[in-house]
Image 1: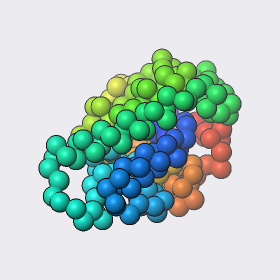
Image 2 (image 1 turned 180 degrees about the vertical axis):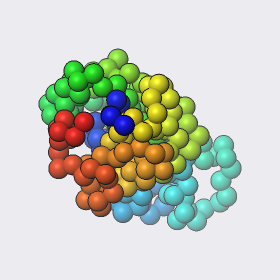
Image 3 (image 1 turned 30 degrees about the vertical axis):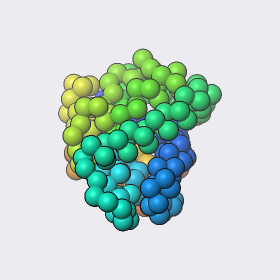
Image 4 (image 1 turned 90 degrees about the vertical axis):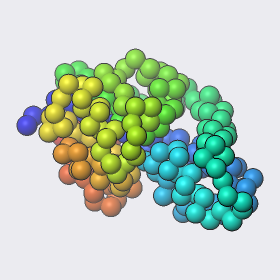
Length: 212
């Protein structure tokens, strides 16, 4: 089926906020005496906030935490993270990404975001993309994290397209797995490209234009 829509992961594809996530989780973990490093942080890519917290708590040795305690910790992390995001601006969107998105739109393709982040709308606003995409499927409308395909299936639904008519663009292996599980063709950049997990493993974001 001819490609009619493209669904992009946000962090690591459209923009890069990994360092902000790392700094926020690190501050929270340090306050609780939990060992946390970049190796652990890499396991959190494409994973929801609460599921990420559970991964971090694998090394927690303090008193038992209630669900309310966990929600408070996740909120604390998010507050730290959003303080960093507030510094973002359209200057954080690369010329390559902006020009490629505009060229894809000019081809008549429908474009969507498929991100586990509940901060996706805020990030898009900071980047100057608040009203650019035809649909946004994010952590505010899903109950299951990648590698479950829910976030991409909802994005396709919002676009009014079948998965077979869409391409998912991902940088995380778990995201590529989610795309495949949902019946989407998958184009990979970054770590997912290095792992060879895509139908197309792209050397550059702009290479999308040659594929659709």
